Image 1 (spheres, rainbow, N blue to C red):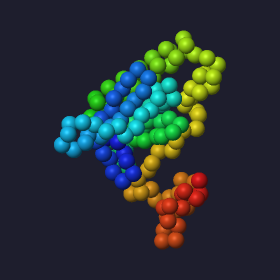
Image 2 (image 1 turned 90 degrees about the horizontal axis):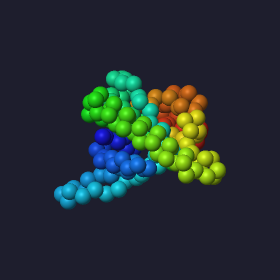
Image 3 (image 1 turned 180 degrees about the horizontal axis):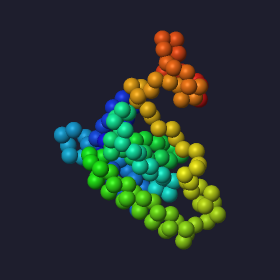
Length: 150
């Protein structure tokens, strides 16, 4: 999968475990991987993004949780569906296993789709208006304004 990083899409290797999803990058020339991040499946939401040629969104999925959210891109529609289905199955299985051992505190920590999650980074080239106040960017209203606007 390609992970949308701040400036560009970069290849990442994703490792799906029974309770977490890890992502890593290959260290050049070593054949080894360096862990970039991990997401708990119990607090994860996967969203299937419809293809949109104008916004360069083809074969995209959104990974959400309360700490981090980002888009990833598969090589084909088939790969996208496989990843989506595998992740949904793993998330559901993880939640079912958790229910059998769940305490009251754990119940409160479980991520729900309507819960607030980390915003998804949108590359500068894809943004022409502030998502907060809807004003168009120009020489005086710069793109970093959104950090102040909220």
